[in-house]
Image (tube, rainbow, N blue to C red):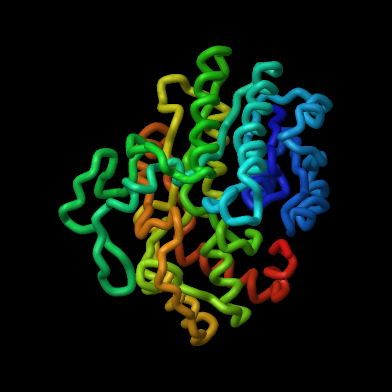
Length: 355
């Protein structure tokens, strides 16, 4: 089995590549990365030493894909994963669309030519911002909790399900991922290709790059450990907003099962997240950091930014039923792993944040 992992030198891609090398030694792993993200170079040599074939290329460029060796499966972990991408002045809207949607189109054409399966790592941000913001919550202790009168289509006691509204606006980022999902399903149907779309919540773990908009838990712990400025933004500056958290390595068993046995009777789109058990607010994270590193003042900005929502936890009931999958790494274990990494790598933020 030969598989292609795009974005292989990013946090998620490199975690998956390492995991597959350890668990499936007979698989040949080909990795593609354009190395435009600060920190991605740190993974190149380590992956090659493990036997991963690391190729410098860009999924936006069809010519970069033409020379790749044919693979039996494509795992797409390459994307600009910021909900503010294209609107924050750091990347253009055209760049975002070219990368997240144009890149998917090129990979789908590659899968068609290879007759390969393809797995898209998608996002919880394909769900409607307006509907997410309408989920009734109330402050309880250090976090927002669901009100007992929460009655929204596609919403369960376990969180946001796959049939929750995806009606615009969802953000430019979310729109590119949702469009990529639709095209992936269409290519699968039109050309009889096995395809899977895994919608992930917040992914985290040691070695994640220090970007506030792409890995809030890792960014917060590293910044807290270094006594760098931190700020509660929005929702009156309380830090009550809640997200779920999943270690990237916990994707491995699911992805391996989908690749080895691409069953046709299971849903193509599945939520894959840490769920309620692995969810927390920023204020709860700060309290955890205070116990680990000592007290550190957090600034406040009361105004809420576009696309921010107070509570977002995915319901992963469907993936548990279809694939007998559930997270393996507890929230405390994820945070402890990141904290250990922060203590051992004091210059991590400087090395992995773009100037």
